[in-house]
Image (cartoon, rainbow, N blue to C red):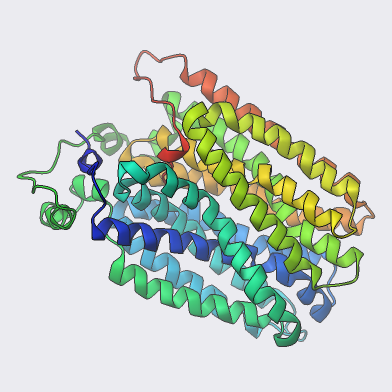
Length: 454
């Protein structure tokens, strides 16, 4: 029996509520960090006098960091524990935010690029923590609701940043957004250390000599009976082969490959939209203040789309619903570019595109962790999400080069919407592959959004 089967069906304890609140708050912080350059970009472009391709490199910095954090650093969570990794991740984000404001026209944009890379490393590591904690500590009665909020939390962070901080940048300068991020990340690091509990599944694997004692202490706070011994490990194969080899061998290796292809394609479209949609409209109208308004449209659309996706995904099935949403995302993102930069039409078409586009994140976050056993979960999730960042890294730079080459919004957004079709096909292929049981592997259950974990 898995230790997470001990999660009670009745009302959640104070410890569980605290874990959920802290975890959601960390995802909201991620949303602010990721969206910051989207609404600060016009001010940076004006202050530094850089080309769009150079600005795209600044935008890509966080994605480069996420790649490093997800693939290289995040797997350490399977060794040192999710709570400790959470503290390291939030502290790293704070350091990255602290570096950014020291960029000047004399130094050029390299301190900003470094700032975004370091921040991205922290965000990539945090992904390996939050989903696991939420999945393990959320009571079954509110599981679907909490996971829907989790899926929308990135957009909530972007919304709060664009509505509260964005309008202040005109008077206070783009640096103000980085100082706010530094303060919030420092507070988050302290809160994670003081309030976030350790993963139950990680403790149950007996990675530490005091694992049983710590596990029983957490179970007592959750009003559950103490264990006399640690549960039988369910990951003996992982311990024998190693987590990275587990992720890339056998049928699981095929699942990993399909998800990497799909997530790279999805990230290419997603980060082209998030970085260049607000900036394109602001530049076309020669009004930097429009960028925060477009980030608001993107954030609200993403929140509402994720809530609907979560509601329907728990009933229809994520693998059935995701390709439909991604097809509609392709159409609406292309429509945004074709309609053009005139307000308020651009606001509403970006809202519609985000409504469907952002569901892809929820889909991959729901599906990928279910493919791996506990001791390989952070590694598998980190590999898929991390390699997928290559698409995100390429999108702002290639997009900036396309605009510098004279591409209009219609052509650019239509071309960059097409990879989402590839993402949808990869999910269909995974679904078909898992319906053919392997002789050496028991079939895995169909994931729903309420099963999202990291």
